[in-house]
Length: 342
Image 1 (cartoon, rainbow, N blue to C red):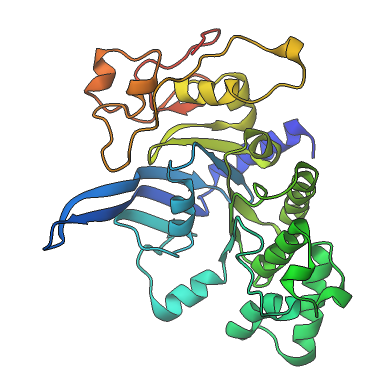
Image 2: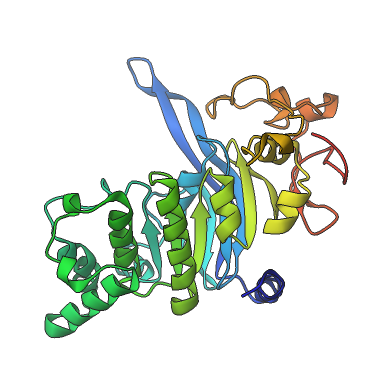
């Protein structure tokens, strides 16, 4: 599918009801101190996120380490409980489902973990790893189970003859393929990919990204793709959301974000990407200071202590995510305009 066709398809899909809706999502971890262990504060890992993901779309999530990307992925898959906010999947509120309802939800929402070794049980053979979801959810057994596992391994580029090996007998890329096969086992509609290529060699990263795109077309999957590597996010995403200190600061379609970022933080991230040739280097806006603590975020715009465009308003008033020219949404009082430098 060429870029024009893919963009048109993504735009058309956004007109329909979203498959996943996130509204006001928060996750705060309490801080206890003193001998009575009273709560003295909270780490605001996620501090009010609103997003929507259309069916068949890939939404990329990027930002520095500690910005809340992985926390949001765990909340979407209900691996952890939210402090506040709502999750709607296919029009149904699933924020607090429990028991059998949660088990049924897990058939439709799956997770690909960052570490392809730690996420696999070293005592289980590959067949058992991939078959486990099918057994737990009573989808297949006996010969049907063996056929299903063989098909899943073939779909991710592995052979049926490898099913009796243990995870340590595989390379990193092969182990991640096993993790992908396990995530596909229940034929989910949405898969959260939590930095699935960051632990792999560059050449293997491209193979896994292309595999994910092929599987998306074959199984009609929707992805939330979490990463801190901008090239991989650009390769696979339709739209991209940029996060900073627990909040989304910019949302745009892939090409618009890379060609004309509106938020100074997004511009700084893009300028930090290495270029292929030294002749292509441009003057960079270097961010000063450290990422603030999510336990004690600054008032107003959380980015203002590091922002070269910050003014007095930024220090007292929190900017809202508002639409900018070109369809971009940016949380900035003074967004970049065409031709501006950060």
